[in-house]
Image (cartoon, rainbow, N blue to C red):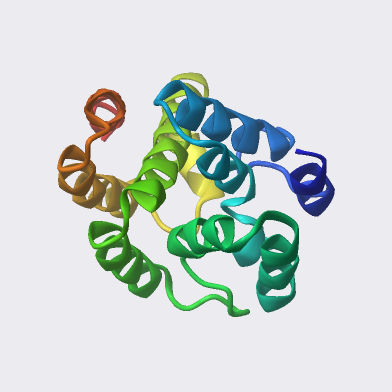
Length: 177
């Protein structure tokens, strides 16, 4: 937790100026509550580290500190580590293919991540309405397309309770269209 906090200390969520560590802790709680292992919980804390905080250098630090299993899960949840990032749709299509064929550990961390993101979006929609979408590089239609595309993948995992909650969150987001 200390390592994840140090990596993301200057980062906030896209909406609300909320410290980024809150997202990492929430994703980790979801993983543990779903029966996740210690490696899956550590990976949940670090799932955005390679992508957002240093690429290959951070990957090697994670490998040295936490082992091959953790770095493999984090890699499986990483959309892109290049800067600048590839175009949004290209990254999302690649991520969908990646998650569809991923191992159950990667799918669990990914599902927990997207569930927490979706919950956060829903809360912000309640507070800000349509103004909320201006904080994102693409509009609500594209974000909902991505979530709609993830849903059948998650529903084929063994994490049906989390997948059902994700379905409800996505449905709630659709009500703001």
